Image (cartoon, rainbow, N blue to C red; front, side, top):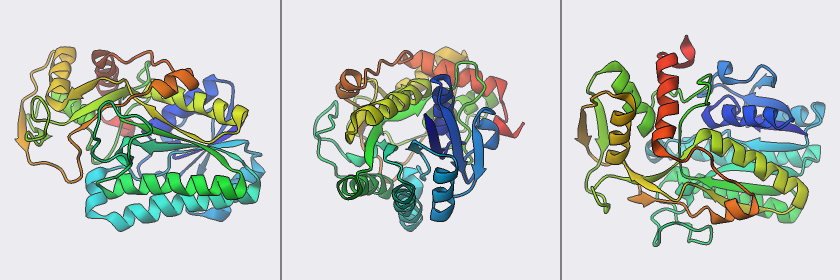
Length: 329
């Protein structure tokens, strides 16, 4: 199968490119390198430097490369930034999806896997969260992801483009050989920030908010290893191509860890004391997000192999130690 991966130079995208190649697929990557890294893209994949908003470019790639299916990662992802700059997120995320679907319609490409988010649920009434739970996002990031899902559903009805939306929860870790990992600037995600604090010994690590409705007052999240997440995209791709049925799946471990529990795991894994300060809440953060991923495990036959939180953090720590300056080395 020939697969186009938009945003394939990003954190999750680059790991998925590796998983697709290991599965025997031919992979083409489109990325504008706004947040992605050219060095993260496997040399066996063909790379185009461009933007998914460029509909003509995407159409030409789909047709020239004889693409069979698309996995779409090219969206902005920072909750706090989306609250501060909602128009930036609506333009890139929603317009980007419209551009991609227009190109797919023109090129006759009928299979799509979409990187969605648990942020579509907002503040859940029940935990763990099932796919049937109400969707009521509390930040523009989650709202754009939900709008993208809705656009896909209507496009399926109109044009027969079948799609799988993968709503995943928190992602962490790095490739098991530490060749690629998480490298954002600025870095806003919990695990890499904790590990950078451990490496640098600055004592500048901050936990945002200790007054949430959780046992220790800090956010509770469900963490998935990026390698397991990448494998789920491959399984979803096979499913949509074989069954020609659109659907939505949660991806998570069904285990929730608070920010303070993640910190304690990092101290255990690194052997470093990691001082921290407690800061104010960030805008748009729900108290707890924990997935019920029974549907993905049953239908997609997805079985995470690295769902121990110490293992997840250990792989991320290996990446930080071997790439102290990320991809800039």
